[in-house]
Amino acid sequence: MSRQAFFRPLLGLLAGAALLLPACRPGTSPESAADKPLPMLGFPTVVAPGDTLFPRIPAFSLLDQDSAVVTPATFAGKVYIADFFFATCPSICPKMQSQMLRVYEKYKDDPRVGFLSHTIDPEHDTLPVLRDYAQRLGVPTAKQWHFATAPRDTIFRLAGQYMVAAQRDSTAPGGAVHSGAFVLVDPQRHVRGQYDGVNEKEVDRLLAELPRLLKEVGPAPATARK
Amino acid sequence: MAAVVSLQLMLRTAAALLAGAAVLSACFTDRQNEGQRLYASHCASCHGEQGEGLRRLMPPLAGSDYLGKHRAELPCLIRRGQKGPIVVSGVTYDQVMPAHEDLTDSQITNLLNYVHNAWGNQGPKHTIREVSQLLEACQGSDGR
Image (cartoon, rainbow over the protein chains, first blue to last red):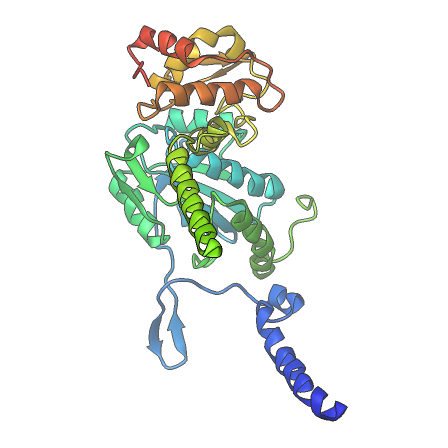
């Protein structure tokens, strides 16, 4: 067998491998991925050809730990991150809130970013309880991070609209089961990202994707930039 | 012929060894580092992976003065949970800690001994017998 005949299949293999390798890379190059807008999540409604509507968080009215009303207008012109918790939750909530604190610490005083934690146990989590909880967590006022309550039905309906699973379960520790999802919402109230709030890597992804969404909002005011 | 015998002997020895191993494995339970594993599954979500606690919400276990000061109450605290204000290293915490009826006395012992000696803690260890006795205070001993 000539040397050439021996190498030919090898060359073919190498060429084949080279073709396969790009498939191992996640999508496009990191630069263009970072420039791409975040997708809109949820089932779209096609109104007309070329006119597709993605679901938006409907109007809501909640009360936060400073007894202030929280509505979509509270987050006008901002992006916000929503989650669902309860103060006496012994399972995933402390972990979630410690991860949310990472995001909060990074965007503290950036007026473009809001935080909204809904209690799913409004019977126990009264305004004073929420206020105490927030302060103990190191959130002195509701200026940026709202710990909010509403009648139970309202909260659970909202959870569904954020595409977060939450329900009462007397057999679960603390009396409710819920997912630890963080939901990223844009100024038009589209859901733009979902992240597992108990998973540090997922929250790293949120920290990486949040700046991409903030590009749609505009630059941070000079005073707030860190 | 000799070869056949020695082969048979080898097979028999192997079979005997295997049977022995099967019996023995029942003696060795998977309980090495049980305290650490129980901590990760039952405690770390609130008290932190490094026992650091969470701000003023969840009390720390690393470097906590509570472990030494209330040493005799710890088994019942784990068994029955804890409610109401509690002062740890000078800070008042007020959260609900769930009860752990699912743990055996020996599991509570392993858990406590892990906490007493993790993250720079240097507390004396408990024996299972001691923990069972301490659990009598809250009728919480399951004798296992």
